[in-house]
Amino acid sequence: MPRAFGLPLALLASLPAVVVMAAPSEYQLKLDLIPKFTRFVEWPNQSPVRNPYSPFILGVFGHSPFGDDLDRYFLKQPLKSKGVQIRYCRTLDDLDTCDLVFICASEKDRLKPILARVRQKPILTVSDTPGFAKAGVMVSFLREGNRLAFEVNANTAKESGIQFASNFLQVVRIVAP
Image (cartoon, rainbow, N blue to C red; front, top):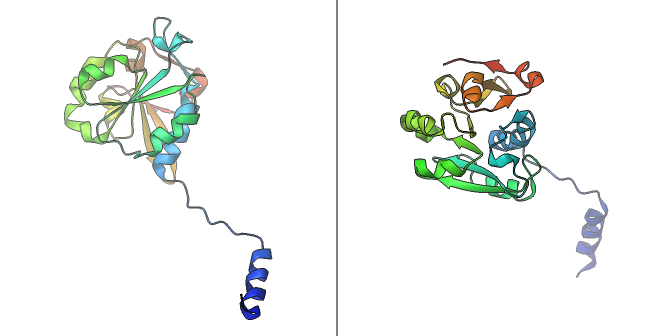
């Protein structure tokens, strides 16, 4: 290497590296919040979530807004102290084995049959579509300016035997159908 190039390269190599990281996407933030808010959720005794030998089944119904991030994230992130299996649900029957189902905006026209299928079952329903919590989804991400918040339909959760910790309910917006 000619000496004229060697010195500048050596100088550059000795400088501390500057890493520019992109701000996390809205869906990355939502992924980060799922394990946090599920700490405040109690499933009923008959739920598979209570079985220490079964994985936590996280279903996604519809066109996932998470892309590949969902699978990568939950490879190393437990839910309720359990390993996570991701299921991409295509039919109503696919919902029956889930512990938590994220209902995507693409399912707006099928929301009623989806909610009817999981009604009174210990399956936590989650979405980020405006109006879904009022329609019966238990937890919905809500964008308030630059921050994410939650809407909770506690009545629907109660019908399913799912309970939220009182300190969680104090910091969410509670909606009723």
